[in-house]
Length: 291
Ligand code: SF4
Image (cartoon, rainbow, N blue to C red; front, side, top):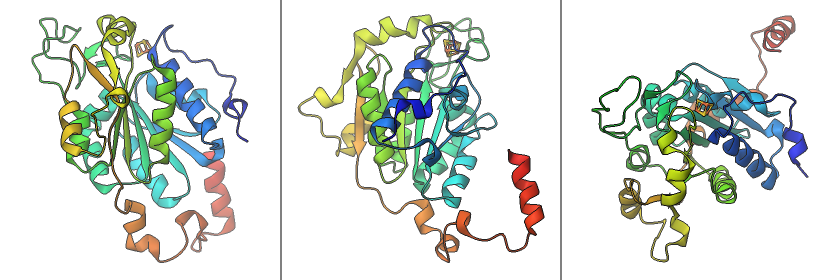
């Protein structure tokens, strides 16, 4: 049995006290343990941002990539090793700003990758600029008179491009977030979990007090059907006095990207194929460079 100790590492997070990323780290670790997934079976790929430091705080395969670029690495890892549980963890700036092009194309390809977006509606690491999900009129260091941009609608965008698992969680509802991440990881295709992540330093008005008063669970709505894509699309844009969390949409996915690629079907997964054109000493040299 996998335990939390298996994921423990003696590195303390440098996040601000009270940051929502602590809850996300906790929820992800607990979800992995609850589903008996061992550290060597998981690869966490991140971009740039406060939350993208997350794999440094777990004993797990991890890769901290360039800003907005975890998707190419994550897809490559999944194509090479289909058995690996590949999870992207990054913020709204990295995922829906710099990485938006990758996001859209990845969603329509349906790789078997889980994406967790720490959505704090701001750029935290660079000290508080408005982000793609900041509300119109939002005052930040780069929008002193209020943002003039309409916020991105990432959940609706994912639905529009064919995502078959779209959810939103909140670390202030920890048990619910653990369950949601676990459900996403067991989905046999691409899964998005957007997470309301309080940034208690640079976005104080959108922290715990704000969300605690507004968040409601779709699972508690007797008439809500997570198999109804149109209803999901409408709820994905609900924001204000009430903010939904839970599974917005879940459907049986088609074949994954890695299952469709004809080159990959002509033999075992890439990680099991011999490196025939390289001498053993060259392989050892390459591996040594990665250690
Ligand atoms: Fe968290 Fe915001 Fe601090 Fe970054 S700046 S660690 S997002 S509270």
